[in-house]
Image (cartoon, rainbow, N blue to C red):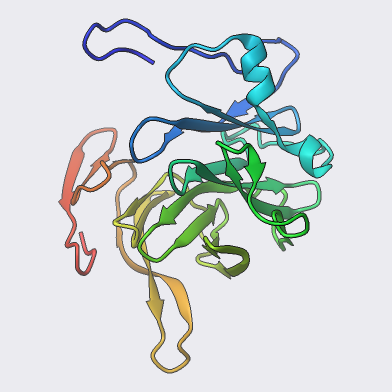
Length: 263
């Protein structure tokens, strides 16, 4: 971490470091105030969660505070990440300042897991039998969770998978969730606009999804409502109504209608 005024590095931490380790790490996330940070990573079959601030820590302090998920839930280390992707098969997001939602995929058994961790009390949220939720998925062992988001207005957590599946989870009761196959397409980089519209890269196009409720059945599902035939990277700043798509040759700028979410 660097000081924006002085340009000097004020904080750093090392993940791995042993040549024998096989590390895949996800992006660093932060709470709304930018005072607390978290990262989840994969260490040769073991899932890890690390929470930190902006103060330098010793190796022993890091070791003592790191959440060793496999050991806590008595899970084996048979998960093997896909070498073709940097994803660690585990993602997380802050719900509030001290609560972190974590979801991961144990591909050996093709099982999805999710839980909430309180980084202040250093405990899983829920009783002994209900803090960890799991579901066996009917999918390829190469599938994995890409990203998760928290919609504070609806109090819902969204966990999206590479092969088009999505979990919509009640943040107050993790055992209450909706699971669906949103699309048959493989998904890539994604952002969530205003907690409602998902913009995601898929092969040679950019796809737009949102939740819609059928008036007759009252069933709510994620549906594709628009797409752009370009291949590029998505750039979005939270709270903005502008999206930028950068290709090899051009940069496209889009304004998003915040009522319809049409670009």
